[in-house]
Length: 145
Image (cartoon, rainbow, N blue to C red; front, side, top):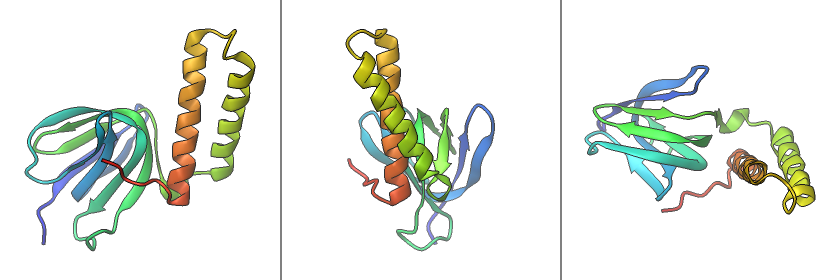
């Protein structure tokens, strides 16, 4: 059996996940990166994207998958992920994700030229989050490196 490491995933409102994992793969600003027992210390910013974790004792390649809205990962003797929002693949409401995407795209079409630049950025981020959530829910979020 492979060695495992403690993983905690926290949001501002709750402890989302706590358990032993053999591998966690996250989307950092530099691409997808994997972390496991014995990894060197690291602190990385997370991009909006997928998160894959292989729990201790799970068959090789059997991952739990979630959508993450950015944040950061702190890797030491254990791994801690801090994020504003995270959802398991099976909990994503596809209809809501597509509705949020359409709403943000509509706002962007009407206001991109004349709107406050900060609001334009927020709309683009909302679109990216909605796309990520829908791709994770559909199982189409491909790990890239």
